[in-house]
Image (tube, rainbow, N blue to C red):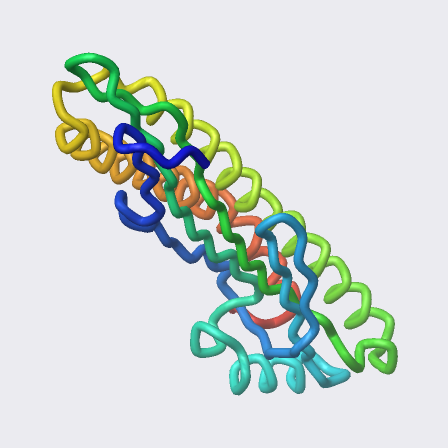
Length: 203
């Protein structure tokens, strides 16, 4: 990075956005993780061979006080570089460091369950994986949109004024990201509840 008096790189100057998205339901925690370009996946083990046993383990050991099957945590950290040109200050580059933490179930004794229970939980797992992947894609999309919006901010008389606008832009657009995530969860709630009802979790 160039080091001169007209350039400024801010790591956390705009603040950091964080949100957690939850698939309502159940789970239990394990130590197995995999990481790829800002995406970390944590698999939690759920013992048990019957719906009742699995339900009990999830309620006792799961995150969100046992009220989640899968979760996606999104953290966005903006990094903005400004440069003075004549009497104005403009944003030369903007990058969003996107950190995603996905938590997914792993049924550790499902191979010993009866066929109906095994098939039901395998189907539920596939749906949870798909659901969390949609949260990941929404976060990726909005990180790109925020980068584009930051770079598009018109030059200002001072870099202080410019960074004030950048902070406002980031906060507004991060809330738009949260709104889309919540809207997706709301649209998905009925499908998730149908699967949970079929497993006896909902009456």
